[in-house]
Image (cartoon, rainbow, N blue to C red; front, side):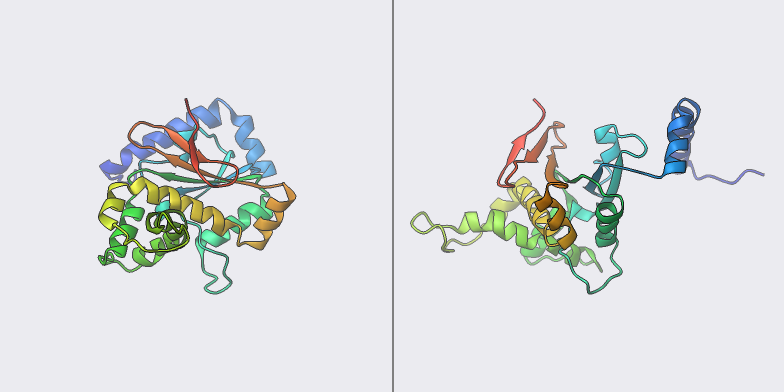
Length: 233
């Protein structure tokens, strides 16, 4: 007797069959090596859970190429020993300390629902959910550093905060917040002592990427994490 499979899942099962044919039948040696010798990815890719931005599909990565962490809005919490039941921090630790990846890429994207939830929270409309509102608040520090302080700076004194933040205008330019959140998460990565140590030693590099859903363009942070620049011409 064959198990009943819901029609929605049939496409997924067909995909697994195709994967078996492409990988296990056409290139069995690769999977055998991954099984016998374990994974050795060079890249930890921290991506959003959004179904439109699958990192393996976007990068055409194969088995063993990427160690992937996905969460709402591709956020990195700061280093903290309290509340040790944390999937994000444990995945980052395993990738850096055990797999010894050489690159960490934070991949954000346009029209991010998590960042939209953050903007609603800032405007006094915190989502009526158990976890999302608190989670996306991780991006607040980055937003204040990289977006809000610029909006508030006066022409005479760049260090002062004199203008009121125009949240409506900010919502119209959500990509600025999405990119600021990525830069903030890059800063958060450096609060992990074993990441900071390797970055300073030159054995680990961190990168911020932002993918434009509308046209497929990719933007990346410069070496100093001060701006996003187009990557694909």
